[in-house]
Length: 239
Image 1 (tube, rainbow, N blue to C red):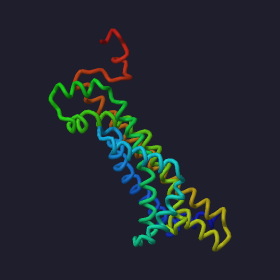
Image 2 (image 1 turned 60 degrees about the horizontal axis):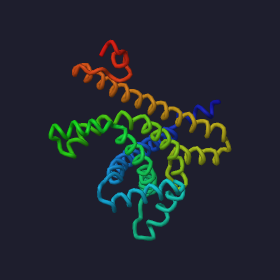
Image 3 (image 1 turned 180 degrees about the vertical axis):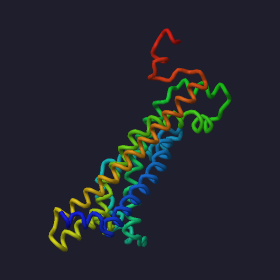
């Protein structure tokens, strides 16, 4: 038990935990940004853009993340791009995440009532203005929960980065275990760090969802509009 505690609170595991968290956040940030652009491309009127988006999603969702990670790490140097293991991991993980986030964002955009677009057109808003001020704010509430699940999934998927020598939690645990043969202590310490990071991300995402919901209800009250799911919205006598 002492060995497990010593490892869990050691500088090596704490450093690896921070690196794992940074890898997760950076890969997800790039994945979300790319996913939004790819979702917009999939709904564009320009056919080649739609074809590119469909082909991208088909390829990256249809091949393993590990294959993509090893490809980036081993093939890019052959093309004259020598990158650090961490950078290779970020590229591979974010490229893969773009495909999944594109479908999540597209689903959120389609979930916004078409009447909202029609009303915005009547008010004279441009397509860019409608997207920015009407569609995206409403779609965000639909996009956020599955994005939270993707965030947690990315945290665990980042363990694959150990294959290309990224000194993350998984590789740190493997090396510690290989050094002293204490697999229970090393893997247990890594598991604790993963659970702590998962819990922190879950609580943070819940707080964001709560703030968005509070803001939505406050806006509806100011406008005198019943919020969907509330008693005022469901009670016919209140209408």
